[in-house]
Structures are given as structure tokens and as C-alpha cells.
Amino acid sequence: MTHAIDNLRAALARAEAVRPQVGGFPYLAEALRQAGVTHCLMAVPSNAMLYLTAAGPVAVQGETLISGMTEVPRFAPEALAAALRADQAGRTTFPEFVQGCWAAGVVRYDVDLTARTCTYFGADGDSYVESYEAVQL
Figure 1 (cartoon, rainbow, N blue to C red):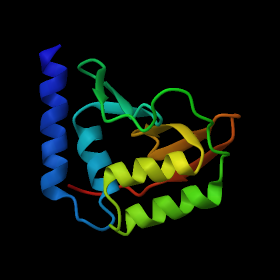
Figure 2 (tube, rainbow, N blue to C red):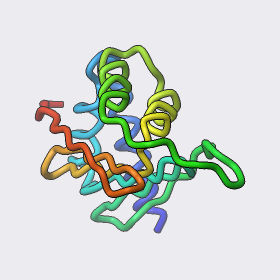
Figure 3 (cartoon, one colour):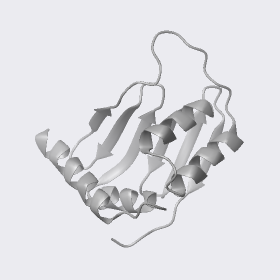
């Protein structure tokens, strides 16, 4: 499975090299899409990302947001939109964005790189979908 990991690492490095600080997500998404990634699935409380790629799935474990037992925040689309806009404006890091998602009640999200959509889900099945534009690398 080393090929899948190497391929993902190369795509992430390419994205880092070409993406602008403001409005950079579509560049990251396009670099991943061109490398054969179809979906990025994030489990927010555990901060675990699963990349579904043509070379095989790759899991990446970040620093968990919670430990033990905790109540899940209520899904708040307006708070999620604020976290998204702050990230799009380059005012947050990725870990800060993930924390903002959790505070907005997002328990998971799915980035569909083919449809160019991000779908954010709350614990009760609520969801919010946002599209992003196609870009050229």
C-alpha cells in the first residue's frame, strides 16, 4: 500500500506548493483529484481523515479533539458558515477549522472531489452542502 501513501503525500505537497493562502481549498482539492482521490471523509471528533484514492484508501490520524465522553454540540449551520468563511479568507489553520466544525456541531464531513462538494453532517442527520469552484493547477 506504499504507492497509495506516496501518491497522497505527493499530491499534498503539490497542493501546498500551488495553493494561495486565501481561497486555497479548491487548489488542494484539485491536486488531490488529479492524483486519483475521489473522496475525503473526515470524522471530526477523532480528527481522522480517510482518503479514498484510485491507488487504495489511506487513513490519516490527526490530534483528537475530545477524549472520554462528551456531549456533541447542536448542529448550527450559521456557525459552520462562519468557520468556512474564516478558513476561506485565510484567517484559520486547518486544525482551527476542524475545531470550528466541531463547535458548530459537525461530526463528519465528506468532500466529493468529482462533484466538487463538501457535505457537513450533524449527529442528528442535519447537513449542509457547499460547492467549490473548479480551478486550473
